[in-house]
Image (cartoon, rainbow, N blue to C red; front, side, top):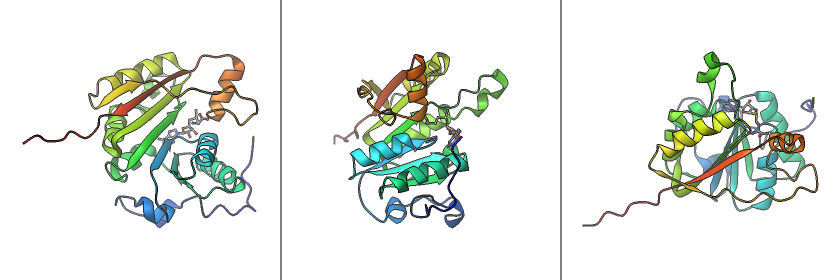
Length: 217
Ligand SMILES: C[S@@+](CC[C@H](N)C(=O)[O-])C[C@H]1O[C@@H](n2cnc3c(N)ncnc32)[C@H](O)[C@@H]1O
């Protein structure tokens, strides 16, 4: 397994939550020192999506939340090595951050790829994708903003579709097309690469938050 490299300075990318105590809303401009639409990924793992997407869309700002500090650090290393300045990694719990600290209507996109399935029934409550998260995402997105999801677990996919489908603020849209990978890095995420190479099914869905409703007088 890849180990974090102590000699690499990731301080411009890897955020220290201790520097942002309390439950006050986070300021994207303060975190990035720049302007642009914000794309947030929940459970970024080793950061392949963030790095590829940030490279492809330099005018967007990418914010990854990853509860496992080691993976958040590895993702930050990938970003630093790629010389990207439009990514930040937050080592912490996405449920808390989304519910408490993300400014309503401030995100252009939310991505959740291969969330841990927690197979045992008694552990299911640990799943990151639940009714509360869907509500937080709906509040955090800007009108017309998008939610993109992928998983290899058919049962979890059904649960996610039911949860988002039950929220009338969302409309299902076609997921963006995936290219044919030529290199190791031409995948959506590390887990997508693993499962596609193994020939396992990958279930994907995408949603758009309703546009702002204009009041008619
Ligand atoms: C199966 S991995 C997928 C990683 C990556 N998205 C990919 O597709 O390669 C799920 C990731 O979600 C992270 N995770 C689980 N619960 C989380 C939470 N509450 N907040 C943030 N990250 C979480 C895990 O630490 C893990 O890195």
